[in-house]
Amino acid sequence: MISELLINAFLVTIMLSISIALIKTRTVIFTVILTSAYSLVAALMFITLDAVDVAFTEASVGAGISTILFLAAMAYLPKKEEESINSQFIPALSCIILGGILIWCSYDLPEIGQLTAPIHQHIAPEYIRGSKEDIGIPNIVTSVLASYRGYDTFGETIVVFTAGVAVLMLLENKNPVKKNKSQPKQKFKKNA
Amino acid sequence: MISSTIGIWNYWIVFCLMMIGLFLVIGRKNFLKKIVGLTIFQTSVFLLYITFGKIKGGTPPILNTSIDTIYSNPLPHVLILTAIVVGVATTALGLSLVLRINSEYGSIEEDDISAQDLVDYHDEIETGKSIDLKFKQ
Image (cartoon, rainbow over all chains, first blue to last red; front, side):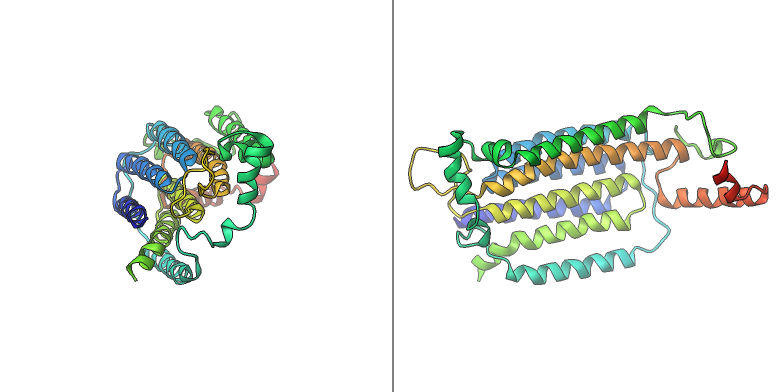
């Protein structure tokens, strides 16, 4: 079982290096591709952590559709990221402090894969039993998603619908008739 | 010692990933980079949840015929499936906001945009149009 954890540790370290590369890069296309790679490695990690449904959702939605959205948006945006004028000391310091606190707290978390961890005691055995006896679907994730927590899935569809409507409203009105500004800001436009 | 370090190594790296995502959101001034940071943050939270659900020697939670199979916890998987789809919806919304900002300002750098807003504000003061008047129209 130690080999499983070693593979995990290796993959998660790859993810760390990809995200460090994301901090370094200033080119938009590299950013998009690194994000896609990050999602794919995350999908691999989900497989080693026994979450196969999550893995193929992440690979298709996280690495596929997200990347397409980023590439489509990238076509209309500046290709280079500008260096910031301000110092990034305070954001970096606050992130390091918060991360240190979280890592300090991680000593109280149960080790990975312990059967005695609190999360495995409460309701999951019920779902595993009920999926066979009450619903009769072999895939437990499906039966929980569609039956036991069906309202969650319903809420999710509402969220996706709302986001779709909002995207359409934002992108539809390219040239608004009523302008609050007296004149359009032509001088600042690099690529409209 | 090594076993226990490996046992919580995932948590450490996941927390580092979260902080890198947070840093991209609050430290970088490019809006596209901020959205990428949100994605990184999201995926690391997904990893944290799925890590909690893992059981040593367990199988994916799909029922098989043998009696003594240990299944990994299916509940985090369900929650994260929902979260992935919602995450893509929010990414799409954020990207369309960035596109709209770019067509209005011609830039997606936070510094540029606040500088343009400042220029506009002073223009309005010089031309005698007060901000209260603008709101009344």
